[in-house]
Amino acid sequence: MTLPTKEELREQILLAPFTDMEPHIKRGAFVLVQENLDLVDIALAIAANDEATIQKHIQEANLSKGDEESFEAWKQEKTFFNFIIIQPFVVAQKFVKLNPAPMN
Image (cartoon, rainbow, N blue to C red; front, side):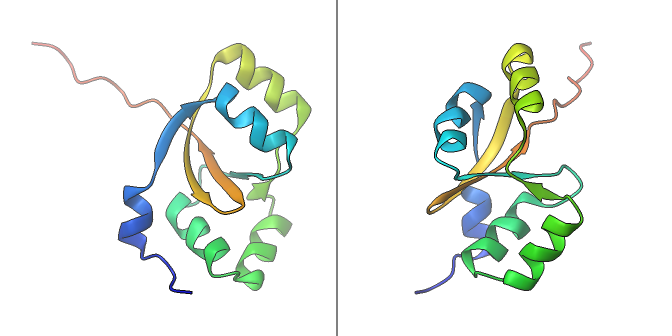
């Protein structure tokens, strides 16, 4: 199996609301990536089955399955996520809104 490149993964990043993540959460395939990490780097580590890197980030609480409290808040806030599908996982990161450009 050939691993995807960073560029290929970057092109696969999609944006979706939390409600689209719920089926993946229910089947245990949702991987939440903390905002201090690069989504593409983590997706690549998962695709490469890089257990050392993945375990390190889990131990540092940078990767998780999320929790019910967060799920409820995201649903209420209508939170969006950037995500990459790395079968069978959906590797997601909370979307941080960009500041709009000032209008002239």
